[in-house]
Length: 361
Image 1 (cartoon, rainbow, N blue to C red):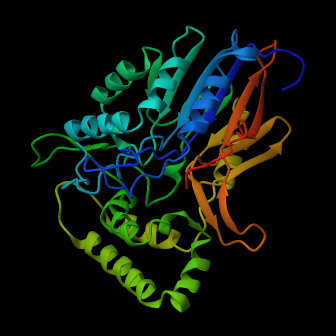
Image 2 (image 1 turned 60 degrees about the vertical axis):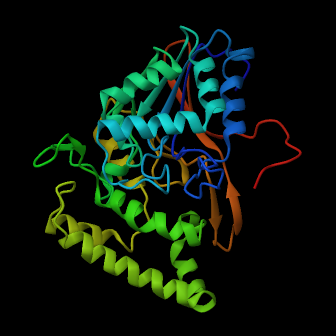
Image 3 (image 1 turned 90 degrees about the vertical axis):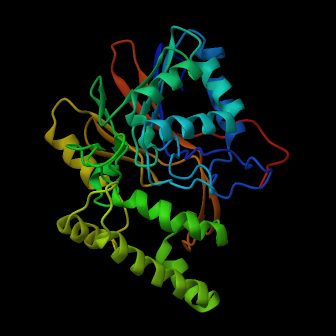
């Protein structure tokens, strides 16, 4: 960090996918829980509240998918319905399932110098409700806020990134559905229904299913070594896509054009470099773009003073890349450091923390 003390800092991280906790109410294992690095994140927060940061103005920006409102409890009878009551209940369940984590967030925000900002992602649609905002302020502190869409400050644009993909984009003209419904429900993207109705069932059999990349390598391997499961999975995906496209349901809206857009994106590996470059080169006053969503950390400079950072994720992945095979855990984040003149220097960093003799697997 250099010898010059930092007086102002923005920390941006994304894609924690914090669910209902490791265990179900009956004591069983919650196979939908993806966040298992709570101790590391608590240490990360505490590190930025003392020492060299004791007098530093620090804002923690959790850039989408911090909460996982789509994968809280396998016994939820209606996970596709996200109305205000369901959003509050699932958020409470997440708070109760991770008491140490939210106690650390409250300690972090317990100072006029520090604040916490949540940005909407495709996995935490509950953030669209004001009642959830109030619940988070009660749990973490009054210097907690929620941003829907793009978060701009000092030449920086922070956005989760899901809006650039047809399967995970919200309809910003209609966040809520109300027709023939007792209360407004979130107009979820297609991908959210895919997670709820397909992926959650598959994870019961193969908990690692959504952590593998590149997925096409895994599918080839599974067709040979796990043939029945692979064929069944492909059939389920095709059947589910057709079923969801033509099923009439007051809790969702879709269109044929949207379906074609989703099909067009299926073979494409999700990246946001092109979108970041377009923003940076077309917007004179934007100097840093920070995305998440793709789960792959990126740092690129597209022109002098024009930077793109993708913050990666705080979950483990299973890499089938020849250059980097095996279980991968990289707790990456963006650090935006202000100098004395208010200029920002962006960094992509990996949190290592202190040495641990034992890690729960």
